Image 1 (cartoon, rainbow, N blue to C red):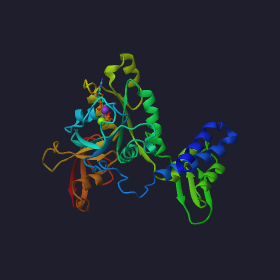
Image 2 (image 1 turned 45 degrees about the vertical axis):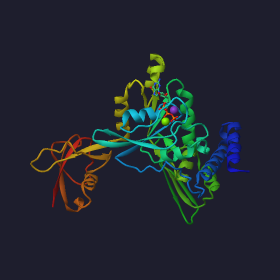
Image 3 (image 1 turned 120 degrees about the vertical axis):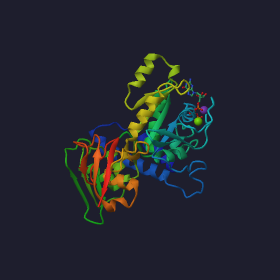
Image 4 (image 1 turned 90 degrees about the vertical axis):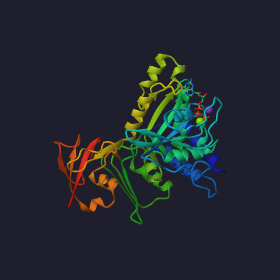
Length: 364
Ligand SMILES: Nc1nc2c(ncn2[C@@H]2O[C@H](COP(=O)(O)OP(=O)(O)OP(=O)(O)O)[C@@H](O)[C@H]2O)c(=O)[nH]1
Ligand SMILES: [K+]
Ligand SMILES: [Mg+2]
C-alpha cells in the first residue's frame, strides 16, 4: 500500500470512529500515525528540481509576505497594485505559474510580497504546483490568504486544511510543552497544570508510535494530543495569517459588513482600490515590525533612515543593526519614546524598544 492510500485509510478510520472516552486512546494513536505518514510524504525525495523552477526567490527586505489562495481570486492584481512589479492577471485560472516577488515600501520598511500560483484542494499532495507554493509559504513571516468574497467560506476551510496537513499552523501559539529526547531512563512525564485533554497513558502511546522510549515531557498548559504530536514532529511552523476577502464590489453591503467583522480579516477590492490602506496597516501590525530612530549627540534624530526590527527587540539588537562592532564599545544608551518612563532614560543592552523610539548610544 502506498503512503497516500495509508493516509486515506487512517483518515477514513478517524472519520468513522465516534469520539468518546473509550476511543480517546485509539484516536490519539491514529492521529500520530497520520502525522507520521504525512511527514514521510513531504520528505524530499532527493529528486533534482523538486523545489520547482521559478520558486527559489531570494529573501530580501525586512519581512516576507506570501499570497496564498485559489486561482483567480486576485492575487496578481493585488501585487501589481501594491508594488512596482507587474504580475499578469487574467480571468482564467492558473495565470500565474511561478513565484513573483514585489516590494511594498511602508513606514520605511521594505516588505517582500510574493505572488504565487493558485492552489486547490489536494495541493499538499502535489496537485498543481501546490507543494512548491506551500514550501514558499513556510518561509514567510505572514501569510495573506486571499479569498473571493463571493465564495470565501468554502475556499477558506479547504485552504486551512491543506496548510494544516503539511504542518503550517496559522494564528496559533506554539504549544507550551517541554520535550527532550533522552538516551536512557524511560519516559518522565509531568504537568504544571491539570490536563483535561490527554493523560499519561495516551502520551506514552503516542510516543511509542514514534518509537520514543526515553524522553522528558513537561506540559506547561492544557494541551491536546494533536499539539503533543506537533511538538514531537518538531517541523511545524507557526505563522500569522491575515484573511483578505477580495472582490467586495461583487457582494452586498451586508455581506461586506459580516466578512469585515471576522477576526484577522480585511475586506478589499483590488480592481476598485477599496480599503487597500487598511490592508497595509493591518499587514504592518501583524508583521510586528518596530522602527527605531538613531540620534547623534547634539543632533536631531535621523527620521529618514530608521532601523527596522522585530517586536521584542532590545538595545543590543539595535546595536547589531547599526554595526556588528558597536556592542563591544557600548556603555549605555539614552532612549526617548513610549518604552521609557521619562525622556530621555538611560538604559542598558536589555532594554526592550518600542515602535518609533529614538536611541542615542554612548560608547565607552
Ligand atoms: N470584480 C473584481 N474582480 C477582480 C478584483 N480583483 C481582481 N479581479 C479579477 O479577477 C480575475 C483574476 O485576477 P488575477 O489577479 O489574475 O487572480 P490570481 O489570483 O492571480 O489568479 P491565478 O494566478 O490564476 O491564481 C481578473 O479578471 C481580475 O481582473 C476585484 O477587486 N473585483
Ligand atoms: K487568474
Ligand atoms: Mg496570478
